[in-house]
Length: 232
Image (spheres, rainbow, N blue to C red):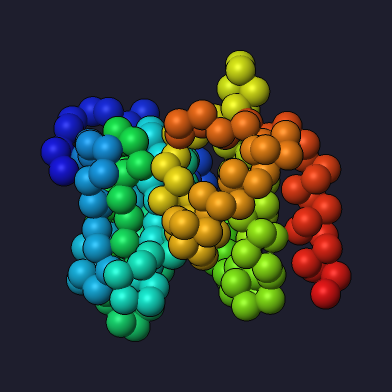
Protein backbone atom coordinates (compact mmCIF):
# COMPACT_ATOMS: atom_id res chain seq x y z
CA UNK A 1 0.00 0.00 0.00
CA UNK A 2 1.57 3.24 -1.17
CA UNK A 3 0.88 6.63 0.40
CA UNK A 4 0.02 9.41 -2.04
CA UNK A 5 -0.47 13.11 -1.37
CA UNK A 6 -3.34 15.47 -2.21
CA UNK A 7 -5.53 12.90 -3.96
CA UNK A 8 -8.80 13.21 -2.03
CA UNK A 9 -11.01 16.20 -2.91
CA UNK A 10 -12.19 16.52 0.74
CA UNK A 11 -15.86 16.56 -0.23
CA UNK A 12 -17.09 13.31 -1.76
CA UNK A 13 -16.43 10.58 0.84
CA UNK A 14 -18.79 9.54 3.62
CA UNK A 15 -16.94 11.61 6.23
CA UNK A 16 -16.49 14.82 4.24
CA UNK A 17 -20.07 14.87 2.98
CA UNK A 18 -21.51 14.64 6.51
CA UNK A 19 -19.52 17.22 8.49
CA UNK A 20 -19.87 20.96 8.86
CA UNK A 21 -17.88 23.07 6.40
CA UNK A 22 -15.65 24.45 9.18
CA UNK A 23 -14.41 20.92 9.92
CA UNK A 24 -13.15 20.23 6.38
CA UNK A 25 -9.78 22.03 6.84
CA UNK A 26 -9.10 19.78 9.85
CA UNK A 27 -9.85 16.70 7.74
CA UNK A 28 -7.57 17.96 4.97
CA UNK A 29 -4.77 18.28 7.52
CA UNK A 30 -5.30 14.96 9.28
CA UNK A 31 -6.19 12.60 6.42
CA UNK A 32 -3.78 10.33 4.59
CA UNK A 33 -4.30 8.90 1.10
CA UNK A 34 -3.18 5.44 0.06
CA UNK A 35 -3.19 3.73 -3.31
CA UNK A 36 -3.76 -0.01 -3.58
CA UNK A 37 -3.01 -2.34 -6.44
CA UNK A 38 -5.52 -4.96 -7.56
CA UNK A 39 -5.51 -7.79 -5.01
CA UNK A 40 -3.68 -5.77 -2.33
CA UNK A 41 -4.95 -5.96 1.25
CA UNK A 42 -6.08 -2.78 2.99
CA UNK A 43 -6.26 -4.61 6.32
CA UNK A 44 -6.75 -8.20 7.44
CA UNK A 45 -9.07 -9.90 9.89
CA UNK A 46 -7.83 -9.82 13.53
CA UNK A 47 -5.37 -6.97 12.89
CA UNK A 48 -5.45 -4.16 15.48
CA UNK A 49 -7.58 -1.21 14.39
CA UNK A 50 -5.53 1.76 13.25
CA UNK A 51 -8.33 3.94 11.94
CA UNK A 52 -11.20 4.33 9.49
CA UNK A 53 -10.95 4.23 5.70
CA UNK A 54 -13.07 5.92 3.04
CA UNK A 55 -13.02 4.80 -0.58
CA UNK A 56 -12.11 7.57 -3.01
CA UNK A 57 -11.80 5.49 -6.18
CA UNK A 58 -12.00 1.84 -7.17
CA UNK A 59 -13.87 -1.07 -5.57
CA UNK A 60 -12.87 -2.92 -2.41
CA UNK A 61 -14.31 -6.21 -1.23
CA UNK A 62 -14.96 -6.70 2.48
CA UNK A 63 -14.69 -10.38 3.38
CA UNK A 64 -14.42 -12.81 6.26
CA UNK A 65 -12.97 -16.26 6.81
CA UNK A 66 -15.59 -18.97 6.40
CA UNK A 67 -15.16 -22.71 6.85
CA UNK A 68 -11.36 -23.01 7.04
CA UNK A 69 -9.83 -21.85 3.73
CA UNK A 70 -13.03 -20.39 2.25
CA UNK A 71 -14.12 -16.77 2.47
CA UNK A 72 -17.48 -15.04 2.53
CA UNK A 73 -17.69 -11.64 0.87
CA UNK A 74 -19.78 -9.39 3.10
CA UNK A 75 -20.10 -6.43 0.74
CA UNK A 76 -18.40 -4.38 -1.95
CA UNK A 77 -17.34 -0.83 -1.06
CA UNK A 78 -17.32 1.73 -3.85
CA UNK A 79 -16.29 5.43 -4.00
CA UNK A 80 -17.72 7.38 -1.06
CA UNK A 81 -18.16 4.32 1.19
CA UNK A 82 -16.72 3.79 4.68
CA UNK A 83 -14.57 0.76 5.61
CA UNK A 84 -13.12 -0.34 8.95
CA UNK A 85 -16.00 0.91 11.09
CA UNK A 86 -16.69 -2.63 12.38
CA UNK A 87 -13.53 -2.29 14.44
CA UNK A 88 -14.97 0.56 16.53
CA UNK A 89 -16.29 -1.69 19.32
CA UNK A 90 -14.74 -2.73 22.62
CA UNK A 91 -12.42 -5.19 20.92
CA UNK A 92 -10.18 -2.94 18.78
CA UNK A 93 -9.44 -5.47 16.02
CA UNK A 94 -10.86 -5.68 12.52
CA UNK A 95 -13.45 -8.50 12.39
CA UNK A 96 -13.21 -8.58 8.58
CA UNK A 97 -10.61 -8.14 5.85
CA UNK A 98 -10.60 -5.62 3.00
CA UNK A 99 -8.95 -6.22 -0.38
CA UNK A 100 -8.83 -4.10 -3.52
CA UNK A 101 -10.86 -5.67 -6.33
CA UNK A 102 -9.18 -3.25 -8.73
CA UNK A 103 -6.73 -0.37 -8.43
CA UNK A 104 -8.11 1.85 -5.70
CA UNK A 105 -7.43 4.96 -3.63
CA UNK A 106 -8.56 5.32 -0.02
CA UNK A 107 -8.59 8.10 2.55
CA UNK A 108 -7.41 7.19 6.07
CA UNK A 109 -8.44 8.87 9.33
CA UNK A 110 -6.95 7.74 12.66
CA UNK A 111 -9.32 6.70 15.44
CA UNK A 112 -8.73 9.66 17.77
CA UNK A 113 -9.51 12.19 15.04
CA UNK A 114 -12.54 10.18 13.89
CA UNK A 115 -13.93 10.17 17.44
CA UNK A 116 -13.33 13.92 17.65
CA UNK A 117 -15.22 14.31 14.37
CA UNK A 118 -18.21 12.49 15.87
CA UNK A 119 -18.26 14.81 18.89
CA UNK A 120 -18.04 17.99 16.80
CA UNK A 121 -20.48 16.86 14.07
CA UNK A 122 -23.79 15.53 15.45
CA UNK A 123 -25.14 15.02 11.92
CA UNK A 124 -22.25 12.66 11.21
CA UNK A 125 -23.00 10.70 14.38
CA UNK A 126 -26.68 10.44 13.43
CA UNK A 127 -25.85 9.32 9.88
CA UNK A 128 -23.42 6.73 11.22
CA UNK A 129 -26.10 5.34 13.55
CA UNK A 130 -28.48 5.02 10.60
CA UNK A 131 -25.72 3.37 8.59
CA UNK A 132 -25.00 0.85 11.35
CA UNK A 133 -28.72 0.04 11.66
CA UNK A 134 -29.05 -0.51 7.90
CA UNK A 135 -25.92 -2.63 7.78
CA UNK A 136 -27.16 -4.74 10.70
CA UNK A 137 -30.48 -5.34 8.91
CA UNK A 138 -28.65 -6.33 5.73
CA UNK A 139 -26.38 -8.64 7.74
CA UNK A 140 -29.39 -10.37 9.28
CA UNK A 141 -30.96 -10.78 5.84
CA UNK A 142 -27.76 -12.28 4.43
CA UNK A 143 -27.55 -14.75 7.32
CA UNK A 144 -31.18 -15.72 6.70
CA UNK A 145 -30.45 -16.19 3.00
CA UNK A 146 -27.43 -18.38 3.72
CA UNK A 147 -29.51 -20.52 6.06
CA UNK A 148 -32.78 -20.78 4.11
CA UNK A 149 -32.23 -19.91 0.44
CA UNK A 150 -31.36 -22.55 -2.11
CA UNK A 151 -27.93 -22.25 -3.71
CA UNK A 152 -29.58 -21.25 -6.99
CA UNK A 153 -31.54 -18.55 -5.14
CA UNK A 154 -28.41 -17.18 -3.48
CA UNK A 155 -26.60 -16.97 -6.81
CA UNK A 156 -29.57 -15.28 -8.50
CA UNK A 157 -29.79 -12.85 -5.59
CA UNK A 158 -26.04 -12.10 -5.79
CA UNK A 159 -26.27 -11.29 -9.52
CA UNK A 160 -29.25 -8.99 -8.98
CA UNK A 161 -27.50 -7.30 -6.04
CA UNK A 162 -24.40 -6.59 -8.14
CA UNK A 163 -26.55 -5.16 -10.91
CA UNK A 164 -28.43 -2.92 -8.46
CA UNK A 165 -25.25 -1.66 -6.80
CA UNK A 166 -23.07 -1.09 -9.87
CA UNK A 167 -25.54 -0.63 -12.73
CA UNK A 168 -24.70 -1.65 -16.29
CA UNK A 169 -22.18 -0.40 -18.84
CA UNK A 170 -22.82 0.70 -22.42
CA UNK A 171 -22.85 -2.94 -23.54
CA UNK A 172 -25.47 -3.89 -20.96
CA UNK A 173 -23.08 -5.84 -18.71
CA UNK A 174 -22.97 -5.33 -14.95
CA UNK A 175 -20.46 -2.53 -14.44
CA UNK A 176 -17.91 -4.43 -12.38
CA UNK A 177 -15.07 -6.79 -13.33
CA UNK A 178 -15.48 -9.69 -10.94
CA UNK A 179 -14.11 -13.22 -10.92
CA UNK A 180 -16.27 -16.33 -10.62
CA UNK A 181 -14.48 -17.09 -7.36
CA UNK A 182 -15.56 -13.76 -5.88
CA UNK A 183 -19.15 -14.31 -7.03
CA UNK A 184 -19.16 -17.73 -5.37
CA UNK A 185 -17.78 -16.16 -2.17
CA UNK A 186 -20.47 -13.47 -2.34
CA UNK A 187 -23.14 -16.15 -2.83
CA UNK A 188 -21.85 -18.35 -0.03
CA UNK A 189 -21.24 -21.34 -2.30
CA UNK A 190 -18.38 -23.19 -3.96
CA UNK A 191 -16.78 -22.30 -7.28
CA UNK A 192 -17.82 -25.67 -8.71
CA UNK A 193 -21.48 -25.13 -7.81
CA UNK A 194 -21.42 -21.59 -9.16
CA UNK A 195 -19.93 -22.80 -12.45
CA UNK A 196 -22.67 -25.44 -12.80
CA UNK A 197 -25.51 -22.96 -12.17
CA UNK A 198 -23.93 -20.28 -14.37
CA UNK A 199 -23.77 -22.84 -17.18
CA UNK A 200 -27.45 -23.66 -16.60
CA UNK A 201 -28.48 -19.98 -16.64
CA UNK A 202 -26.38 -19.31 -19.74
CA UNK A 203 -27.73 -22.25 -21.74
CA UNK A 204 -31.26 -21.16 -20.83
CA UNK A 205 -30.53 -17.65 -22.16
CA UNK A 206 -31.08 -15.98 -18.77
CA UNK A 207 -27.58 -14.50 -18.38
CA UNK A 208 -24.52 -14.01 -20.55
CA UNK A 209 -21.09 -14.48 -19.02
CA UNK A 210 -17.95 -13.41 -20.87
CA UNK A 211 -14.79 -13.51 -18.78
CA UNK A 212 -15.33 -11.20 -15.81
CA UNK A 213 -18.40 -9.57 -17.34
CA UNK A 214 -22.00 -10.68 -16.70
CA UNK A 215 -25.10 -9.51 -18.53
CA UNK A 216 -28.57 -10.23 -17.17
CA UNK A 217 -30.82 -11.15 -20.09
CA UNK A 218 -33.91 -12.08 -18.07
CA UNK A 219 -34.20 -10.12 -14.82
CA UNK A 220 -37.69 -11.49 -14.14
CA UNK A 221 -36.37 -15.06 -14.19
CA UNK A 222 -33.79 -14.31 -11.48
CA UNK A 223 -36.32 -12.33 -9.44
CA UNK A 224 -38.77 -15.25 -9.57
CA UNK A 225 -36.13 -17.64 -8.20
CA UNK A 226 -35.39 -15.27 -5.29
CA UNK A 227 -39.09 -14.64 -4.61
CA UNK A 228 -39.82 -18.35 -4.65
CA UNK A 229 -37.16 -19.00 -2.02
CA UNK A 230 -38.45 -16.13 0.12
CA UNK A 231 -41.95 -17.64 0.12
CA UNK A 232 -40.73 -20.94 1.57
